[in-house]
Image 1 (cartoon, rainbow, N blue to C red):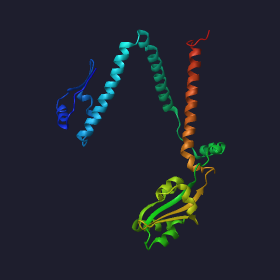
Image 2: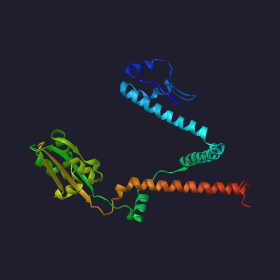
Image 3: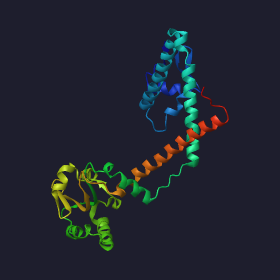
Image 4: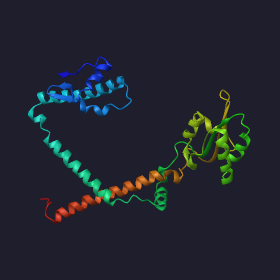
Amino acid sequence: MVALPMFSSCEAFSSLFRHEDKVIAKVGKHKLNRSEVDFLIHPGTTPEDSIRLVMQYINSWASDLVYADIAEAQLSKQEKDVSRELEEYRKALLKYRFEQRYVNERLDTSVTREEIQEYYDAHKEKFVADVPLVKARFMRISADSPNVDVILKNMSSDNLDDMAYVDSLADVSADRYTDYGGKWIRIVELAADFGQDYKTLLPRMRNSVIRIKDTDYDRLDIACISDLVEAGEPLPVEYCEAEIKGILVGIRRHRLVTALEQDLLDDAREKGKFVIY
């Protein structure tokens, strides 16, 4: 049976927490003290939220114990014997921790551009765009801004002076401006800035520029597309760098662990610890 105090008001809950370490719940012989739920209550949390968090914790704590007590009472001695499973878990956990230490001490996580390019060239079929990718700049500006034309003229330029000029105009004219770090982005990210579905966005591109006017808010959203990869085309290698690096480091890790297992077996055989009859 579960015994819980009834929190009928915030005042009652507050009075409960004025006691140094009062028992706040009980399941059979198990007791839950106030100090064990202190971590749930943070400064600024409302009394109502505090009650909700504590009650959720108490119910979860009680549920686990009720199950355990019922299982203890009703399962047979053989069914309650979990020593084998615990030992298997202990060995697996020790193996995992030793492997982690061994690998962390030896794993080289540095990957060169040449290694990335080599892997990319050998597995190009894995790196295909599922949606278009773009390199773009996006700006939201008042539709009647006197700087619209000059911004459109310079925003699509790759000239550093033109880019700097656009940046300076954006500071004083734009409600929002981003160049996405000059990196490849999925078209869905750009479409979200427009509040559009990406499938309707690209057809509106003219001379590498997308312009959408929102008459309700008298604003103009502009994107200049400096590069584009269509869906189904190979992904740019620079877009895949992080993924390929993770793959290469993962391969190295697997090789380390495989070699470790074989070395340990060979050493055990040489020392007579491992014998097959």
